[in-house]
View 1 (tube, rainbow, N blue to C red):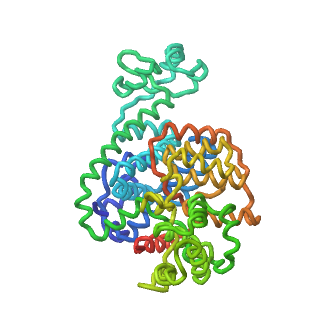
View 2: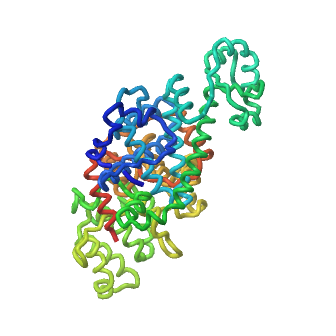
Length: 509
């Protein structure tokens, strides 16, 4: 795959004319890969922006009813912010359309590497396409379908009036007045076979007369089939990409990278006392860290994976090196480790995490995605993500012991069933802090702690946003969506900061 710098693009003769001929529509099926050359910096930047967009699509799809005003306004806002195409009638959005095109193919490379990643990518791209298609005017829909060789013809008003009675009878939920309001399309029977089998469409002379709401489903099914096949073909070409030492590390980590703020440097370092930790673990720790803290207090020991995950989290919330050494030593010597063994066997690794030993790397606290995707716990371990790695029945018992109401437990388990682990943790935050909308997208345990402290100290107003349709959609989506792995949502940091954070992630041990 080749991609070109802005300077190189200026040399192409076809750019001297109307650039819009390259991307005649703001919407596409991504059938042709880009053939430009671009720098690695632009490659990385485009990938991160699309990753943010797809995380927002996932989060909104679970939290709100698709195509609701709230869903549409938030998604349009994100498209504007990230400079992706959002207005179909824009006179000149070539750069936005180019960005949309190239970034899709970059993430297609990153997310074709496993069945689980392919399912997630396919679902989010489908939801994004659905939103964009719904924003098109009737005229643009017709032009787009012609462009992608879907020859569906909108029937005339005269023909619709002539068939109004049959259309109303054969189309579930359509009264005569609704038939008059809705656009209908004349579709070949082969393309509408699912509607025909379900007896949801009027058939005449070998054609199905499909209302707009169902034409969307036909176009989406067509897009799904093409993208699913393309992902499988891309996966087969991976060996040639894996030989490129520049791209392969980037693609590997894009599929489960963290793109939010850096929590390795905390402004409140030293402001938390060791005496506060027990209370904070109940009020402001995410479930993964609360579980680790309880296991440490109960057993006076944690294995390496638990010490790394919990130790770096404590570093991120403000514990100094001296406090960390005191905290771990006091707890370990209450068990089977004496002071001398601790100093010789464990103190070094704690100093190492703070950048005081070895190669002097100042290690960053683990993000949600790193916890979810790497180093799963085995028997006797307590690290990992409880929503990802716990048996659902054990998770239910744990939530009950923490006084989570039954309705809340049901919602969390539905999200876990749909593999939306970070959203399940976000719901846990809402239930333990008595808010209806957290007002942020959760992608880091230290972010959970920071937002909890803001809320409890009055630094942030709780959002009591009751959206019935959103709650209904949340339940429905867990049942109807393709299983997907929850990944980090968009953040408000600048591109430079995000790239630095991503680079730091790549160099982490």
